[in-house]
Length: 230
Image 1 (cartoon, rainbow, N blue to C red):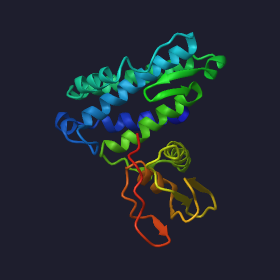
Image 2 (tube, helix red, strand yellow):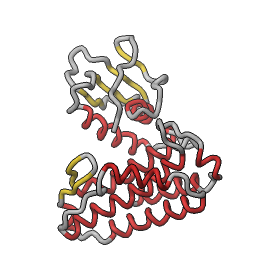
Image 3 (cartoon, rainbow, N blue to C red):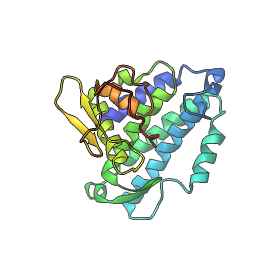
């Protein structure tokens, strides 16, 4: 939670700079303004409070009532004034922190109902950190993948490659970190291209937050095209 708190503080400082016109401007995410991104982050925190409550109480509480309700809540909140966005973002983050603090040790062993399926409760704090750090980049307001910590980038890469490995539309590839022998393998490594570079640049490329121009491919050739990440 220390990392989540620090990432949230950075996000709030960025959000506090936006005026109404800047919030209404397009984000890099298709069809979403910056206001949509901030509304999503607030509702994500509330959704995680739902599943933390489910883990703590044993009740069956999904992250969102439905996919349609999730989308409607984001759309409804996108055009709010800057001060309402900022207050919602701050208060929803506080509710998430309080829900984490209320978890007894035994509750972390639960499995909860996330938007894309069941997840272990032990992953929920990481889930929030991932949402805040990646979507902070999506605000296109000066926060870049290069600002991610090395530890965050490594964990994000492990998370993403684990998900992609189970998808039939993912090309085989080997990710190699600069200055390290550490590799992540997706698919059959025999004959697969090796994509190498800094962990932050690899993570940005694989999540669609970077064009991969700093990465190298061995044998020489174009970068593989990974499928869209969640």
